[in-house]
Amino acid sequence: MQSTPPALSDTDMRDIISDHLHLEGPLLPILHALQEAAGHVPADATALIAEALNISKAEVHGVISFYHDFRDHPTGRHVIRICRAEACQSMGANALSEAVLAKLGLDWHGTTANGAVTIEPVYCLGMCACAPAAMVDGKVVGRVDAARMAKLLEEAGA
Image 1 (cartoon, rainbow, N blue to C red):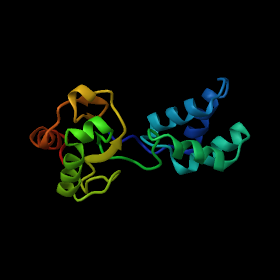
Image 2: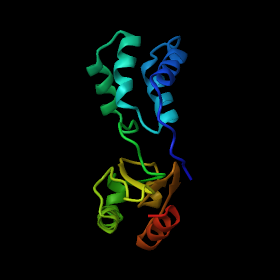
Image 3: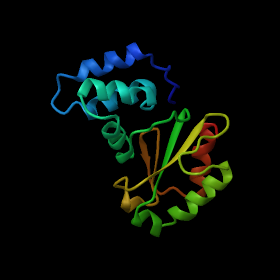
């Protein structure tokens, strides 16, 4: 179970940024470190990163928004990612996704009202032979049908 990380202060974010400035191409490591610490890349971090790397805030935002793994908002305690790639679609992932989103009353990237589960799309988990696939808190699960998804959601507290 993931726990909700504490909010980061400017000092915390500056410390994380400075810990990575010695790296070649430090932007991605900084973003990963901030997300690891806060559960997402806080909006306030954009200006701090831009200043530290002498790049524009737009460049930082562009990288955050380009990579699907970076989040600009907090997630639920559990993140369930449902594969949306072709193999999973051919094995029922679209119907599974629609049923999950309807059951929880969410859109993609939405979090349940109790903060337990966030549902995200993912575009290939490398589990094509076991489609449809999902990922629950970083653990890949194959051959996910409605019954298995219901159990995963129940275990996650959705």
